[in-house]
Image (cartoon, rainbow, N blue to C red):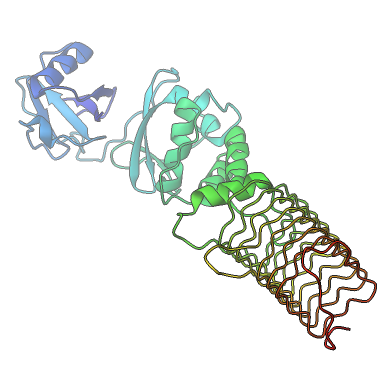
Length: 393
């Protein structure tokens, strides 16, 4: 809705702010009622007559008259510039602000009521308390950014923080601090905190991570390389194909999570729980999963993409009942691991440390155990007999 400031016969005194609705005659009718005259003509600041409602812009300063010609609105009879008199102290008065060259029209009560201790309240609650400068149109001059001032004015109007796309929240926060809008400062600081990832040292929570997931297009790669998720509950999330290289996932709850095709190279998974996780085609080269629980995990990719755990530290892990057909565990460390009833058919275990592992009930058919260390390993009740060759230590 457009609004204009109207004065009578070129006078810069006792103006009225009116909405621009309907036709030009409607505006003149409203002006007549407001000023108690028979308004017949409308002029701009330069004395040009306006005969079309579409020529009026928001926040224009215009002049109405009856049958008398309009005087020059910018000068008095002595040809001296005229300055509008200060508006009265009434809280229903309308004010026009010139903020960095952009005009805003608002009620005095908007500026003084919601935040009575703010700078704006002090500026406009007592006209004598602040030497407000005005421009040639009588608007109060405020040397601040209009882009950041607009969300502040709207907040004072309706109490909601609404910021247009592309407007930096940090800029709005600085303006809120400048004007001492205390309640808005709290809103902005919380919004900024929620919109940014945690710093390099603070662990990322489930809530923060889910927000990042939802904000990322499904076709875009989500890179979480080197991030700290220590102790987070990420259970049952769909984390397919995400790059967690060198990420800290220690002591995380990853039960029933979908990590199909994810990159966990050199990631720290120590002490984490991944029971029932989908790990098809996962890349865990040189990762550290010492003491982790991977019971009932599925590493077997029907498409033929094999999970790669080459060189991983899997000391003391519990992988009981996991499907690991064709998995690559070459030179991995599985000392004291529980691999009971695992499907290791066709697995690459060359050079793997299987010392004191429980391999009872495992299917090791076609598994490559060349150069592996099976000292103290338990092989009772194997589904497929293990043929010890010279290559097995």
